[in-house]
Amino acid sequence: MSLHFQHELDELKQKLLSMAGHAESAVSRAVQALIDRDSALARQVDEDDQILDRYEIEVDDLSIKLLAKAPLATHLRLITVAMKASHDLERVGDEACKIARRVQKLNAEPPLASRIDVPHMAAVALQLLKDALQGFVNGDSAKALAVIPRDKEVDALNKDISQLLVNTMVADQSTITRALHLMTIAKSLERIADHATNIAEEVVYLYEGRDVRHLK
Image 1 (cartoon, helix red, strand yellow):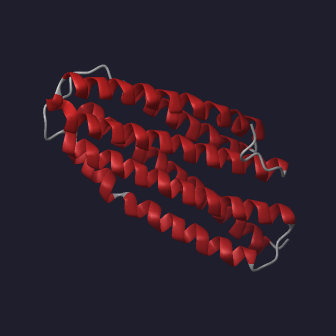
Image 2 (cartoon, rainbow, N blue to C red; image 1 turned 120 degrees about the vertical axis):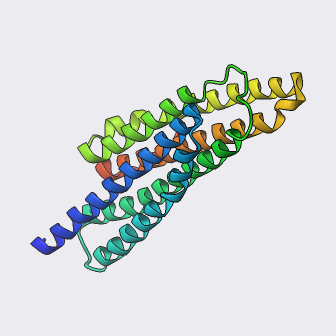
């Protein structure tokens, strides 16, 4: 393997890690905007989405360039995993934008007096994303593998939040619009956990060479 090829491979990893940092930050800031009712922060999250879009294009372009050099099987796995992970990270950014847009709508109305713990759900989803990415960085397939079953926890939280919001809407029709915004936010967090799971599955494939998608 040439030094130039290794340099480009390292560049690919660094781009993906930088992209991951932006994706995590976008979700964290969107949820913070919800907690603080900070519309300016929410707007900033929405505007910064173009950063992740650019990263995805750069990762894809560099990956295609590297694939054309017929690398070894281990390099092929890394490159294909990078392309798939960048797609998931871009989608994480999209979900952060959806949250930010709903936050701006929520902030135009009085706070909803309800026991909806969206921040907890966000913390769990973000932890899954962080663990999947740490598995990638540290070559720790066991850590990535442990992410996969924990996706069910986020699914359960989304179900509980949705039921609480349904009950809130039934009890008071004036809450319907605000409750629907919060349901959309919870659904976005569930999807973020799904993307974290996708990345975790790819990390297992990268380091162990086995496909754990769709396994019970």
